[in-house]
Length: 161
Image (cartoon, rainbow, N blue to C red):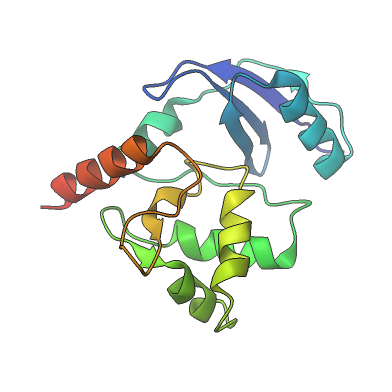
């Protein structure tokens, strides 16, 4: 039986909760809601998460446009799995629209469904949600902090130059 571990990590975007299995990062979320974070993990994995000392250095690297860690998508829908894999393939400093992601996973016209998958994504920044934008304005459409999204995209663009 796999082990599900979690820890709190201090990051440049504030305290985060991180969970991992042997397969990879299972979740990453705001540290404000420990009980909700753990309940979501229990529902998804059917396991009781154990506190552990996890290496969360990947967070800063991912936020800076560096390599993304392996992820464990167990318990997520097939649709969400496909969306998150496509989004993980978007190069740092680039953006794609919700509609483009929908087309890439074989669901043309599914931009709203992609938006739903992104809004419930438990894996930011291992899934770089900030790289998916609205077609109407080319940057908005992220459930997180808009200033953070712009800062991350500007930082990634500067690194690519």
